[in-house]
Length: 305
Ligand code: NCD
Image (cartoon, rainbow, N blue to C red; front, side, top):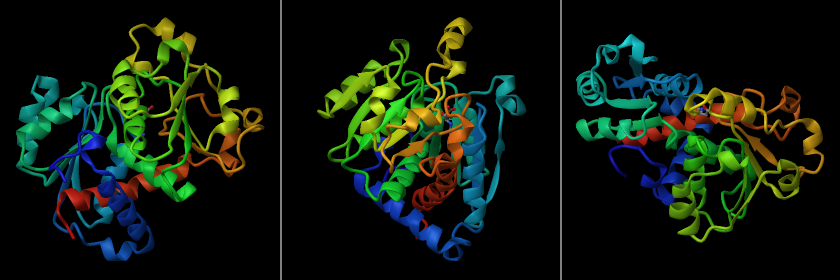
């Protein structure tokens, strides 16, 4: 296990399986874990908006008996005075045992990690990676489907800027018999580096389409995503593309009865609220799982038994 978690591929399949098993045990026996991090402090350094990720990290540490410090926007810290990520991280290291960092610039959590001795977890860096969302997604899929292999996984929406999709494809490519159906408009297809470095290199089966309807009947998992407005260079393009896919009950007519619908959230328009009561909708359960897997991850990174 590395000191930090910056990229999901730093974890082996065995380590991921172990985290999923620990999360399962925490769900079953929360009392056993309630004091595991007594006296430990998590610092959440969020330079970009967040609801679920920050609050689930914080709840995770509190439920392990530890406490939390940090900031939820760059304007609330000395960053607004021009402090570097390295200096902020070195300062926070004097107060905390572990850092969770979200930043609009790709690579910022890596810079922080290289400058401190305590573990740093990437809580989302620009359009790049989001490894703890992927751990959340893997726990959700494994609990809903009972496996992480032999699955047809549809990823739909903004596959270009959606960092959660990049990390999910990297992680799931390591399981046997996983096939991806990549559903997006032409302008929002997955980046070349994901295609060549992950899919082509790993000889992973995938197809690309712009039709959610055509893809639907074959899917075991449908991973919906929001069009990432904040990463667009021009608002007109965002407005043109934002409602390309809206999952409505009629689109589920030809879906498998045991399809699992995931979404990292926040949702804007891409899943109609009518879907929320469909038993195949997993996205709020997914939020709950996010806390348990972050508890398991922090125990591991802090070296707590
Ligand atoms: C995602 C993110 O921040 O990348 N949200 C999250 O962490 N659950 C997805 C998004 O913002 O669209």
